[in-house]
Length: 47
Image 1 (cartoon, rainbow, N blue to C red):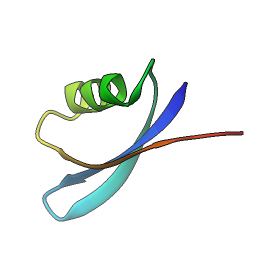
Image 2: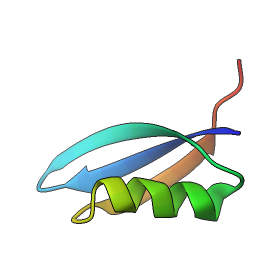
Image 3: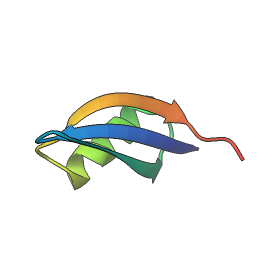
Image 4: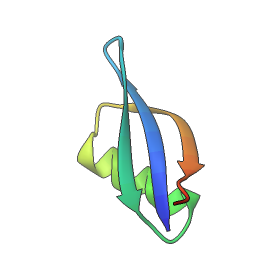
């Protein structure tokens, strides 16, 4: 499943699109790529 994770670091909000099995897995992947970030939202991407 393609999932868009919105992250926040030092006043900057950006999105990371990942391939994951569920929302929790997507959070883990996004935080592994950006360890200092805070997860703001997790949304499935269709289409």
